[in-house]
Length: 428
Length: 133
Image 1 (cartoon, rainbow over the protein chains, first blue to last red):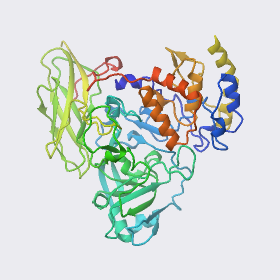
Image 2: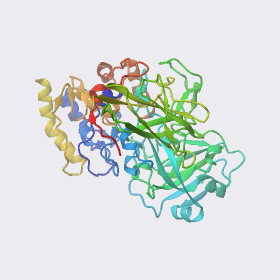
Image 3: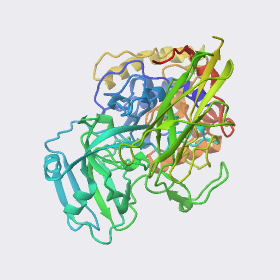
Image 4: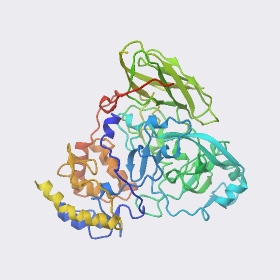
């Protein structure tokens, strides 16, 4: 179904750089013209903010630019940019910069000057307000590098039934890169954290799609205990180079194992809160699941929705690409990655008979906490025919991936159902 | 015929708008009059008599992809409009709202996909895989 849905999603044929700020709006005077031509009364026109007149007729001309990204990323949305990698392009142990998924909520900042970029720490539970330049951060604190997996909380949303609104991510809103920066803890301690601290929240320099400079698109965060972990970083580098523009250049947060929306991009402010942070997309139904499980399609009140913390165990077959045709006497090698929200993945298995039997894969240890692990296996097939190779990971707590889509939730988060690829075996 | 006339009438206007929007840069665009299998190719939206209205109202603020990748009942689409009005500054659509809702509910209704779908056989591109060394 997800594939069927994606048929209507056309990638822009060609993209070229242009100013992001003018996107989507043109000068006044066209709405009534459009209304006239269409024979439709544009009843809403007078309500649009001054100077912002809808164009509406330029759909294929307004895609945000996927600067620095691979041409084969699947573009789910172009305003804001949301793009994921097909699984077979995530085969590298360290996800290349151009293949790392993009989940933007607003418009990335333009005209970035790294010499004047600052990060301010403040809030009710900060001992003081302190502002650092990028140079301060890079010289004052000890540098650390970790391989950390980031996965969008909505990865896999396309499989929920009834469907959840939002970007219909399938499999590839995940990646594991080497992030370099400093420990968030070191900076927070340099400022001073009061005993009353409960949560940290971030603010980035991306702007709201509506063009309203006072409106923030997203401001999420994590509990103070998560902020203080060794692997919780303020990062400026991905795989040894500056962050890609769409992944938060020049500065971002990194929190492994939690929804990637916690890891704020284009970071310019961190607030140390004496309560759970209440910025946009922390509240309501965003990045929350029902506190108690619900039946598919249930309406759940905001107060009965709980914030997602750890992401569930998951795995992805990255080789071969689905649709492999092999001969009966041939050995098939598969490989991929497995990850989870805490601790580590203990086993990865595969099945060629739709889960009737499972065989163990070889699985590496994680390079560090929150790094994805790599599995591989070799298999023969008993006779010719259509097969699917399914993979299933189990974490150290004994929790496995379900073969069916897990418990329904209104916003379609946390689908960690087993990944599978199609294989055809023909006579030798 | 009426649709064709509208498209033709719109062409010069759109050229003017494109020019305005891109500061005069010449860009490669998908032919806006192209309709394939009932789909307006440039936007990916279903093409019917209310297409232009939906396009004008919805894609001034967000990508058409946000429509085409989602599925909902009429009530579900109504909820999304209310959400956009509450949080995204969408104005009252007045008499246009039922037309938009009818369009969305007709073309982008949910299907019962069960608890786990078959892999989409039509989308698989089969290839010969030789054994790795």
